[in-house]
Amino acid sequence: MLHPTSGCADARSAADPCSRCDLLVGLDGVHVEHVDRRDGLLIVTVSTPAAPTGCPLCGVVAIGRGRRRRVLHDVPGVTRVRIVWRQRVWRCGDVGCAKKTFVEQLPSLVARRGSLTRRAVDWAIGQLRREHATIEGLRRQLGTSWKTVWRAVEPELVRLAADESRFENVTTLGVDEHIWHHVDHRKRGPKELTGMVDLSRDSTGKTRARLLDLVPGRSGKAYASWLSERGEAFRQNVKVAALDPFAGYKTAIDDTLEDAVAVLDAFHVVKLGTAAVDEVRRRVQQDTLGHRGRKGDPLYGIQTILRAGAENLTDKQRTRLAAAIEADPAHDEVFVAWQCAQQLRSAYHAKDLTEGRRIAERVVDTFHTCPIPEIARLGRTLRRWRSAFLAYFTTSRANNGGTEAINGIIELHRRLARGYRNRENYRLRMLLTAGGLTP
Image (cartoon, rainbow, N blue to C red; front, side, top):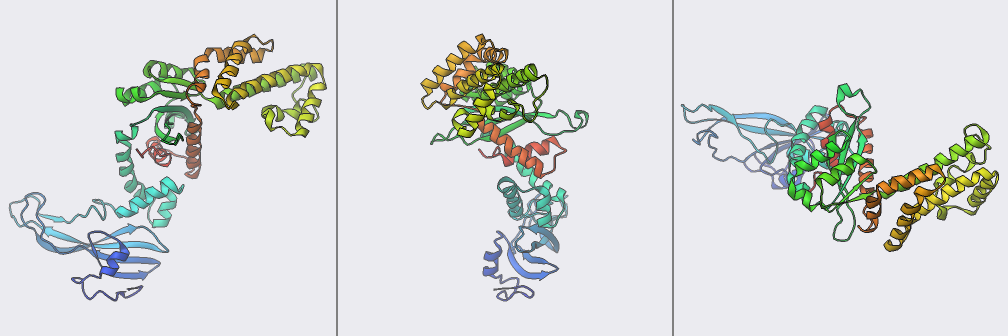
């Protein structure tokens, strides 16, 4: 068994390693020579078994030149762990070889010139991916510097991001933008990034969204360029493209995804209806009272009720709504606008897609003729987006909800890290945490 100060009681010599210690430490390719606890650290001394070694340049059997101690940071437990690797130094046996001396390498233990063990790197990536960890938090646990942790993790993330297999089998694609910094764009570049999300459904019909990429800018050109880079096979495989009502993204889809059906996101369509009701309420408020809503004003008191679904209102809220509308004949306009928004919302809540499409078609055909200007404007918007609006009902309710969920994960990790300075580091971190590096 292990002893915290005297090392391994079962190990009789370096040539007779303790198999029980090797199993406990779990490091492949080395055996444990000594285990010690001091200064709040668990220090494990290891070395590789003796074996003939050839020169990496000429292949001639090398001559041993002793060892050097190399300290590595390992996965922390109750205390921090240090692996002291007694690394062999060799000299080439060929006097004419340019290699002269070299040291042994053990990729299963640590990367060349690395200071974190391979399993510590894997542990750090797992913490970043699943446990909402930050580089600063991992640095604190490992007892090293921020740069040391990131330099160990970054190459693995770059390798995974370059793997084109993660773009395979994408049949439903979502797109949205977000702000990644709030600094002068001349210092860090564009504030907006366009994010592409895989919204494909699995064998059970569930959408398991994952971030595919982040590119600078919020424009149809940025989206179209990314789609062009993915290749013809990727574009032909995409059958549904969900988006918010932004013409730039719609143009990119029409130009580059000829076989895909563009679907307008349900959340944003309902949001447009709610915004129209709010605009009507504010206009009527100004027309009737000549000022913005104040405490005690009938319409001001029901502003939150007007944003709710009719089926969610309590009896008390319905009474308050009726009282506010009856307070002035001019308030009827607000009530009509609210009913229009509820009709739009009911299209998405219909259990039968055929019925939902019937309601949606009625909305598109009638709203633009409404005498209330805000509702008429909403109707004209929906008429322009008619095909994408109605496509929701022919694509088994395809929507951009998964993309919004990914944006939520991105916002969470940006706050945890207190912001980012380097866009490429930001991209790699968000691809990792949002599942983009998993095929």
